[in-house]
Length: 305
Image (cartoon, rainbow, N blue to C red; front, side):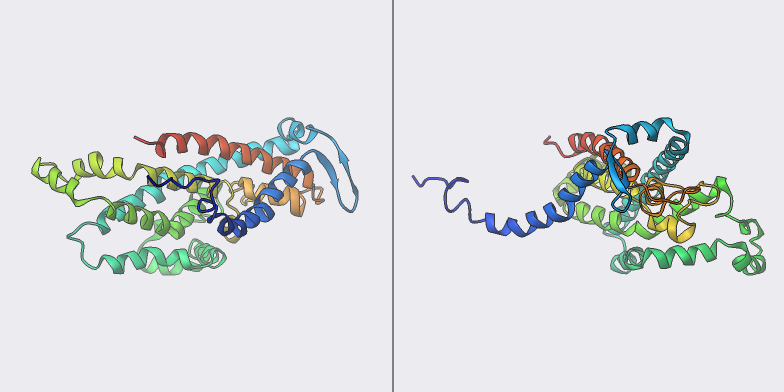
């Protein structure tokens, strides 16, 4: 009987050289910057002014000093709301569109897939600026009046109660193509035998989706939820394009990403001097928040049945 190759055998190690480039890329551009960020969070000052070791003082200031804690708590709440909008709108519509696109009675499914995916290929700065113009009553007011849609003439991005929701919905519109295509691929990978059995048993479309399709694509649902969570807690460009790095109006659209940029890179008002140590502290807390959010979802959705 032939001996099965192991990791210690020559055959088992043939895959190792192919992993080295990816491993080096990961170490240089991901692991080392992460470790350096953890190190910087324990210091204050910069390269030009000199760094001083302060231990956990940056973390203490982040949660106790009003200058930092107020902004951080508000930005964290906005980011969480931003994420929930994406989960409820982007991902729910994505699975709805995918279900329709994989229906055998759906005509021109390829055309609709292309239409849904087109916004993903556009630059965020471009789409953000265009939506900023569309939501500006000065630009679109006369056109909406001609269509008798006066109720839409409103400073959506200038009001604290509507600004963040509008930015989140624009982000959903741009990125909805990614979860849709992932759901389409998952649904098309389900064996037709399941649907034949469901048809014989007299299950309707909703019952088939709820009891067959959704359970079978659970790993994909979990992966999309994780990607949405991670991407939203790192969101920056859409707010920068539609509002500014201060999260206008009056910090109503301020996210963790914009707060990190102001504190650690650009310098937050009124001081205007970057604080890499405090910025690294914000990034470190965000990293642990992501771990706490990702690990349970992985355990629930990626485990073996």
